[in-house]
Length: 263
Image (cartoon, rainbow, N blue to C red; front, side, top):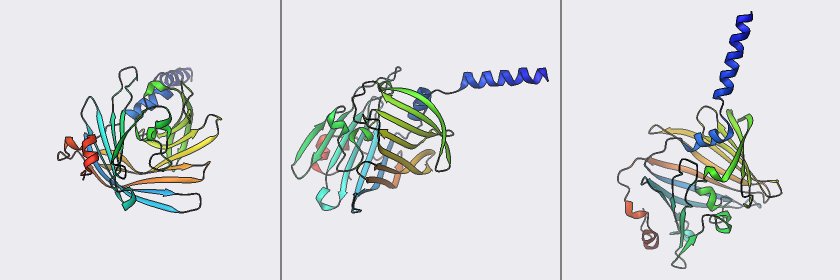
């Protein structure tokens, strides 16, 4: 009996030593393997408080150049948004979790004008093309910007998840506090709750329809609900192609956005 108690104590000690904390969990989420490039056709649905819906067809392409990851998003339909394009250069983090702010450009064909979008501040917190997603939601947030705390575990849509609180060190953001839920087995995001400066729930992101494509785990549906305005926006990825060598490097430029020739 005494030997069993000692063994049980050792097992508990080992479990404590190897247990992940909040920072390590979020870091694991960021380290999920990704393809070198991707091409995705997607449907974006914008749902108003009155129940009206606007549907957009969009094309998303990404490519990892090593020192920078480039992404371009182009609206294909309907006619009133056709040709609108968004280009982002996202830079990797260093060993301390710090990273250079992303470079971002928005092209509006109606004005034949490209506008630079600031990676932080008012621009980044603005709604992306009238959706409930912000420009910051589209990019990668540096680990060093937040403090982390593991709150426990919770099941989300049948998946046991880590529940991690992420609090902005600056506290200046519109949503300075987030609670992230990621799968214990795969570290994929399943839900994220965004809280405003009054610590009231502002938005809820849910991720669903997880599939494996070319060995990579991918979430095909992302829905962002603004609980304060009673609106929501949903991105559904339909045609996902990974590691396609035919993606031209030249499409990831402001000039390509302005020529409106990204296919």
